[in-house]
Picture 1: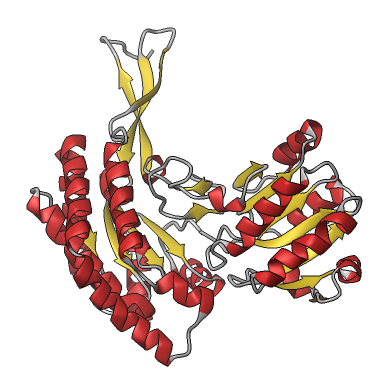
Picture 2 (picture 1 turned 90 degrees about the vertical axis):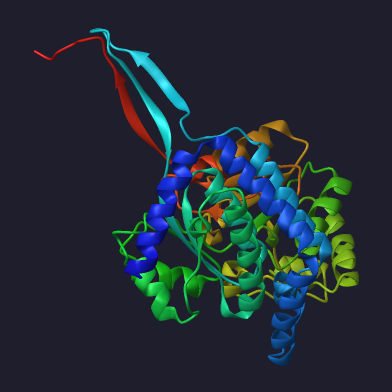
Length: 412
């Protein structure tokens, strides 16, 4: 780990000093390389999918692992979008003049070397590599064993592309093994690693937090809620709630719990349940929900805490917006919450009082995504309130240092 860390630190210094134009050139080269390498990447992914099928992996979990030409093209498009963004490194912030004439400000600088541990989704390899490079960092990318062939192929393609423009390939590193002992070694390499970011299930995040000696930004589970208010536009509510649960249920910004105001529930829930049934969604509901939707199973306390990542939905009928907010505070994971309402005062209350990292009015929770929010891509969605909160883009992979400009002042 010391040898690998030393190489990464040297690469980070080179990348930081290379300049924004050179880093953007590297990102475009990475995107072009992905476009040229579809067959190679898909062949590697097929090996991972074959192993997943042998283990009986199905549904949303298999979908998270699978690549296709469209998803590879989206990865390349994300890299080009990141390349086109302003260079954050060297940006001067808040320059102000003190009474004695000195000027004090802050400048964005790279974090250094980042260790990212993630599961299942190979697209994280490209997204994280691109964001870290844009911000002038080096990165260790340690994906899960279930996607090992896909991640190895992607990383090899990206490293070759970076080297082709004169940047060090070691800006994009991995660990020699998927053995967790290597993760522990990385997490405890304080001399070389400046920040650890885990992306995956609750068990992985707890493992990283418990073993790390370096700072950790947690990307915790997504127990996301949609609250349908008494004054909701019903068609908007049907469309939003269907999309939030069904469009891609195996991702962290999919809705896991639906909260419905009691005044609208008798009208809204039966028809909504029909749409869910046609899509194969299993509803687990409170007693009022089960009275309106006879096919619903009883919801347990654990169901309201659950990140199902599947076509399963917890439902609760609530008396008012206060009860909806209280439910979110009790069971939520600080990820993403949405309200559907035409009452501006209720929307404003929800946006002000719910303190999750993303709060949405009259749109699907699926928009809690760096690409959809204009960040190009995201390193993940931070549910840690320090440093970064919500989708983490390029600027969130920088730190700030103070600079002082003087003209000969001395302190008495």
